[in-house]
Each structure stands twice: as structure tokens, then as C-alpha cells.
Amino acid sequence: MTKKIRNPKSQIPKLKYTLMTGNEAIGEAAVAAGCRLYAGYPITPQNELTAYMSKRMVEEGRVFIQSESELAAINMVFGASVAGARAMTSSSSPGISLKQEGISYLAGCELPAVIVNIMRGGPGLGNIAPAQSDYFQATRGGGHGDYRTIALAPSSVEEAVELTRLAFDLADKYRGPVLVIGDGILGQMMEPVKNSKFEIRNSKLLPKPWALTGAKGRKPNIIRSLYLKPGALEEFNKKLQRKYEEIKEKETRFEEALTRDAELIIVAYGTTSRIAKAAAQNLRKKNKKAGLIRPITLWPFPDKAIKEVAKNAKAFLVVEMSNGQMVEDVELAAKGRRPVHFYGRSGGGVPTPEEIEKEALKVMSSWFVDKKPRTTN
Amino acid sequence: MTAKNIFTRPKSLRDVPTHYCPGCGHGIVHSLICEVIDELNIREKTIGIAPVGCAVLAYDYWDFDVTEAAHGRPPAVATGIKRILPSNIVFTYQGDGDLAAIGTAETIHAANRGENITTIFVNNGIYGMTGGQMAPTTLLKQKTKTTPFGRDKIREGYPLKISEMLAVLDGVAYLERVSVHKPANVRAAKRAIKRAFKTQIEKKGFSMVEVISMCPVNWGTSCEGAIKWIEDNIIKYYPLGILRGDKS
Image 1 (tube, rainbow over the protein chains, first blue to last red):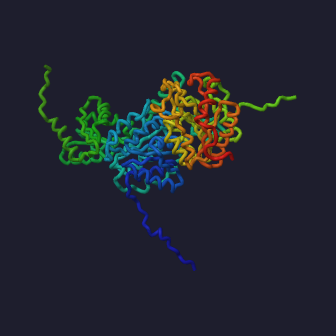
Image 2: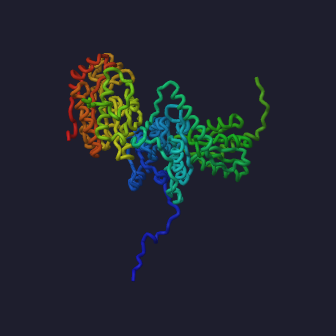
Image 3: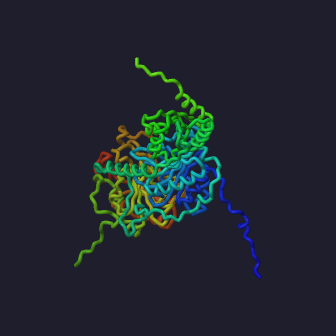
């Protein structure tokens, strides 16, 4: 007669969700994506991510390094990428400024890497409160030279998981650095994440014949961003631009809500977009036709979506936790067809739905003012 | 009677014209590394890191996998590569500005972590590529583009003894200072480079060879003058020998 031993673990109900902070979720997403090296340096408000990786990467037999500086961290990621591995670093605004040298080299050497920026207030040391004032840095290249980086901006913890995984795929596909852009709120707040989001996918990683693994049975591989022959760098830069055009064509992502009949389109990303969405819903309750466009890729910016809604909407209201950065991209996309208004809080200030609603009502009420024809003097 | 070929170009060294100036030591150090790599039979698993500076084009000469790195960052890049590929042989090739000025932090911390990598530190006491500015290892009273009256200890501080600093770190397994200004020194330099690579093969930790090298063009002297400058001045301030580890 065999005695049936009950496995104590089997009594624990299989949980469908895990409650975790954005920082931890990004870490676990990187583990699930097959990240083999993580290097980071302490900075608030992303410390939980580094701490999480110090445990998980070691558990998985992968590489965790607390580096001596942000410069070292990004260059360790550079090295891992040179060797063909998926690699990630994370930081917050001042640390991301330090990483720009490395990001420029990654772009110049066409090396895949994922860089997470959990933004805080600036300029300078600023503060440790949430902010979105690194938009220009994230979308204009950030470092020196003629390059761009895909910038993914999640608005929830679960989306942070999806976009971190996507970041690794896009980095490999287009051979370049990809940024995941969150803010202090996203990094610190806890939300449930479906456990299935962390499942290891069986899809094979792209082969990396360019990686340095030792020149065994093949010609040596060289990784460099130096082009000294006349015309060579211009040619290479044109190649980069063709790649960026392809990314614009294929990888632009955004979400729209309540836009079909909207007269006022609120444009916001990340945490701010959730606050703006609440404002748009409140406005709808008051029979005010407000809608929302939420760029998911900050670069490439969803300018076609802006152009499209500009056909029917009367105006845009851009809301950011900065003094106006993304607003320039909305203006570029709207090309003067519709007025673009702006409401921003910065230095750690977070807009409330009421504040956004008030701004929206101010814009919308101006449409009903009797407009006398302007005369020139 | 058939002639016996007793010395040939190392397999790891490409047969291409040099871009280095007459009397420069880089070519000697390049070939020493390649001879050692051939002798240890590690060409197919070696990954080199070329610096920013005169040796930025090292990959034009070395016939194995090479990556560039930003100025001062080779030890961090090497760390990333070696941690992913622990069975490969990873070395950095760095000048004095790269290793002892802009990359001081990366150097010290890679050494202190005992990263199992090898660093070939070419010390010629000057920024060559940019036209001869003062380096951290420029000697006192030495004239450069940015010390036109000679390096002054009050204004510019003392020549940095970075190898002596590194020698106190527990992560450093082997560290030797050599020179390539005379044939006997070149032979000793090769032995040191070989010991450094062996240290890595045996997974003992961080290994480094500081190579005192000539830069006659930027020192404003002749090839002979450069050799004399090393003999009379540099190796008096930077004495040759093993700073950490042993000959085994």
C-alpha cells in the first residue's frame, strides 16, 4: 500500500495576478525577455528595479552588476550587447543624462540595448518626485550625433511589462538602443499584473552574426562607430535614417479614446494620460465632447493620428508633467490646422483631473465667444 | 641546405601598412600582443577592445574580434563582454589619457572587482592623437601643447602613479610595468604580456601590463631622443618591474 503524500505547494491556489510596483514589474519583464546582463547604479525613484534585479538575475544564473557609475553601467550593457546578449540598464533623469554618451555609441555601433528611465524632476538634481521633463532628451536622440531612439511610454504597470518585453524585441530587430520611459509614479505604484504576461515565449531570438564571440571559423567581426574615409560617415548616417524611416512606418503606437466625435483632443502620455482620461470622461458626463490620444511610442511620434483627428476636432490640449515638450510634436503634427493648447505641471507637480477639466472648459468656452472680425491698424 | 624560417609575422597581425608615426611604440606593442595570442593559441577566442586615441584603429591590424569603446570605458565594456562570455579571452588596450584620466573610475573598479580581463596600458605620457597635450602621466617640467612652460606640480599636480594605486587592490592578480625602448625591454615586455594573458586563462583575476612607450613626434624629439628620454627620465619616475603577483 502506498501512502499518498500531498504536496503542500499544490494546496496554494494558482494566482492569476501578482501585485507589484512598476519598477519590479519592469525587472521581471526583462528576466522574461531573456535579459542576460543588468547593470545599474542607485538613484531614486528607480531603486526597487536595481534591488529586484540583484536578486532575480542571480537566481536565474545571469549577470547583475552594481556599477561604479552610470557611465560604467551603460558601457557594461554595451559590452554585453557586443557579445550578443540581451542587456538592460535603468536609472532616473540625472543618471540618464550620464548614460547619453553610451546611448550615442550604442546607436553609432548599431547595438541593441534597453534603457529604462523612471523620470524625476529636473533640471540638475531637481527632486525625486515624478516628472516628464526628459521628453526632449528621449525623443531627439539625447546624446551627440544624428540618431534617434525608440521611446516606449507605458501608462500602467501591466503595460510596462508588455513594453519592456517589446523594447528587447525592437532593440534586436532594429539593432539599436530602445528606451522605456516611465515616471516616479509608474515606478513606485503597485498594480496587479497578469502572471501570464511573464511567461517565457518560445519564439527564437534573432541570430546575431555580427556579435563578437571569437573569430572561430569565420572572419573577425569589428564593432565600431568610427568612419574616417571621406563620405563614409555620411553614407552610414543615411543608412541610419533609412532605418528610422522604417521604424516610423512600422512601429508607431498610440491609443485613442473617445476621439470619434471629439471636439477637443487631449494629448497625454504615461501616468498623465490616465489622469487626462479621467478628465475626458468627466467632461463627457457634462456633454462636452473631449477625447484622448495617448502616444505609446514617444519616438516615433504618432503624428498621423494627430493629423487624422485634426480633421474633425476643433483644438488640441496637450497635458504633460513638464513645462511643454511633447506639445512641440503635437504642433508639428497639427501643422497650424488646429490650435494647440498646453497645460503642464513640473518639478514634481502632478495635474489633477479637475485641473485638466478646467483647462479644457476654458479652451472649449472660448469657441462660443462672439468673434468680431479683426482689423489691422 | 634549406633556409629555416625562424621568425614570421604573427598570424594575429594583419599584413597592412602602419599609420603610426616613426619611432612610435604602438606597433611594437601590437605585435607583442599578437605574438602572445598566437603562442597561447587563443586567436579564435580573443576579443580585443580598441581605445580612443592613436590606437583607435587597432582593429585594422589585429586579425581577431575587436570592438571600439568610448574614451575611458574599455574596462566597463570588457566587463560586460567577459561576464557574458567567460570562456573567451578579453583584453583592453588603453593609453594613459584613456586609462588614467577620463577612465580612472572604470579602471579602478574593474580591477577591484577582480574582473578576469587583461589590460595593456600604453603609457607614453602624452595625448598623441589630439596633438600632444599633457597626460596624467606627463613628467614634471615636461613640455606639452598644454604645458608650454613645462608641467608644474603646483598648477598641474604630479604624474599619476596609477599602477602603484592599482597594485594595492585585492582584485588585481598580476601587474607589471615594462618598457619597449630597448630590445631587452621588448623581450621582457612580451614575457609580461604573456603572463598577463595566462593569468586570465587561469581565471586568477585582473591582470595588467603598463608599457612605457615612445612618442617622439609629440615629445618634440627624435627616435633616439625618445629612447634616451625613457632611459633618463621616465623609468626613473616609473620604475620597471612586477608590482603585484609573481613570475609564475
